[in-house]
Image (cartoon, rainbow, N blue to C red; front, side, top):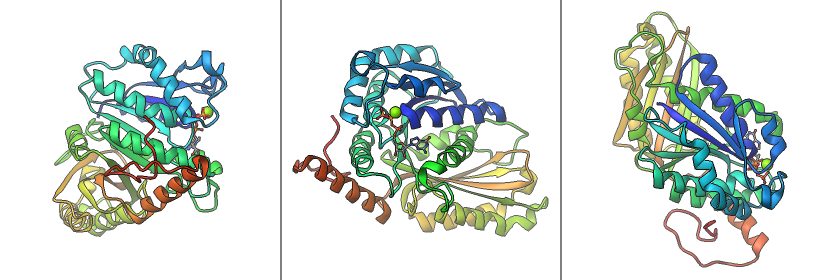
Length: 359
Ligand SMILES: Nc1nc2c(ncn2[C@@H]2O[C@H](COP(=O)(O)OP(=O)(O)OP(=O)(O)O)[C@@H](O)[C@H]2O)c(=O)[nH]1
Ligand SMILES: [Mg+2]
């Protein structure tokens, strides 16, 4: 899927850089352009992609210090400049636009829903948000910010692909220590998803197409990605169980949003050498996925890649609220109530009614 990436804030910029670099190094050519936007000037200087500073008149290049309302205001005031800066990158080749942001900070958290809304006004291609949720051990301001940002982003974006900072790093590392690991994993896994549909080596039997990703994300709301990989035999017949257990691991232990299982749609991509991909394994894995997710819309396809391993990617669209997500929303609402000490009484059919929309 040809995509243009816009990273907002520090996490957004770093993850965008990681995705762009990975895509370039692997020669996938899915990333059509990458721009990092931040209110903090020095954070941008460390990046190896194009950058843009916003909010200079308000915060003088020093960031918004976790104030996501200010982050949203600054993006609103400078959306035209950001869109102008992107203009040349969003060509007719782009099939989607992805705004990348840590939802717990200020610049990315506040800016992402505003920018998603503006992009949707102008472009016909879907606008997705890749949102990073704070881990459980992160401070209450991060939780409150992420709750409000998520609520607003889910309303504005065509779909919000969530990566929980507790999900894709080893348990021994703290979230902060794990940033590099997490960012590498995001680059590799989401990078593979974006690259599916961009044929790289050979032609498989049933190659996945970009439209399958877009259709899987069509229900909107929340999305999650599961991933698992393992060495595989060079004989497809010996890989029936490999494929079924990879699919199981991708969904049950390898998702970007832990415990996200039930969903409206799903896409199973098996990446690897076509000769190693067992059709029987894929068929079994898909019916297992139908049962497990409760989805009546499970798509599938191969991603031919030169490797002695096989990988399963499971993209979930229209993800149901899991216990884990409820726990996050409770945490966020509590932190927000603590910070504002007021109840808003707002009701929303998607998110926690104790969390106020950002705008
Ligand atoms: N996965 C990942 N998360 C990060 C990274 N850097 C920060 N975060 C997370 O992102 C959230 C903070 O957002 P930042 O991106 O630092 O904030 P910002 O958008 O720059 O906003 P301000 O600094 O307040 O202007 C926290 O939940 C962090 O744990 C990173 O490199 N990778
Ligand atoms: Mg920052």
